[in-house]
Image 1 (tube, rainbow, N blue to C red):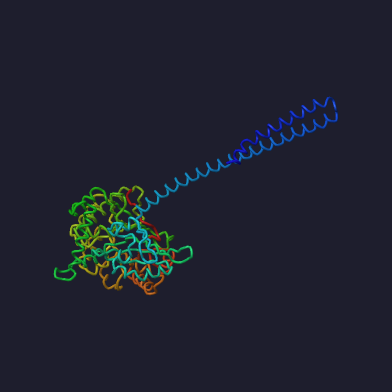
Image 2: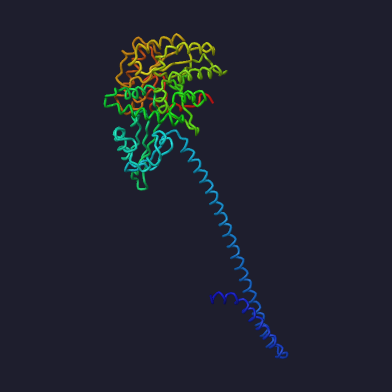
Length: 497
């Protein structure tokens, strides 16, 4: 504190000392009375004192200017840093909002498991797929989340991921309530700063097909005295709970029909590309249907198909799909009907057995003045095996309307061309699980080659499902498969905007 007081009065003390010295010198000069030597000496001292004071003042002013400049520079830097901080905060808030939006709307299920198998992050799609609240997922082990049976089915893939390997596979998962889902799954290992595996991301997409529903139906068709009756009760509870979620009450049939009538379903299409891709042959498209939820996100088919099956509503939904696809096609002024492009539509088991469906199809074609040749109906191999006479009659009637027929899921089980003998189909869709593994599994590759070779001999074109990479596309082209479909070709897009 004393040093501060001295610095504040030092300038004044120096000024008083200089002025006093000047007065003393002037007085001395006056008293010497014309002594030139003394006058010259004292004048020199006076000039030196004045110059010293001028130098000191100049230095002080320069130091003041320098410190002022430094202070101004520091102030500008501080203002710049504050502006940068505000900009960074704004960008971070914007990024956080975007990430939250992505997290809420992303259809792919994303889960982060640590090295111990506990959940550290999950997005909304995963939570809604499981029909669980966040507190029943966060921090829980995957065995507890998926169930012991489902976990046992993916345990090998989990071990590979924790060894640092990226894993891709297709998986049928039966939930505790009895619902069966077909998932396309990818594990992406995560590494810490030292290069050690700290966990992995579990990415999954619901690719449940209608023929997968037969598994659900089988699990539900047990007698009351059968030990599996509890499974049926669980299935009923699951579907009732789900119907309440989409409809607000348990009158699921009316709610499902209302969802169709109120435009809550959307049609998508996915490209079925010819191989080779630059061959110039006509491309085809598979029609996909999605249910729009209140928040604007889309519900995958594996979620609402079991509900529609349970309430006998699949024929109603299939008719809606056919009607809207034909209406869309009739409104496309640039649609060249001579290109040979087809629109593939899956049909459910109940629709195949609906005696009125062929009449509806023909009447709709006539009403809209559309040729049946633009439609190709997909019948699952499972339905063909279980209901051969019914499928044969369905194929005969839709072909009379000018439509084509494809057999989907071919080769999922034992490959047998005997079961399609006598059925007129134009396309065989090779099972996606076989296609996914064909590069790593020689047995699956041989199966693809055999299916394509025999199909060529009987005049049927082949379509590879779930094609995920350029390597698979290249290998399929070498084999001679006619068409390819999957995310490696094209992602689904809206058919009707």
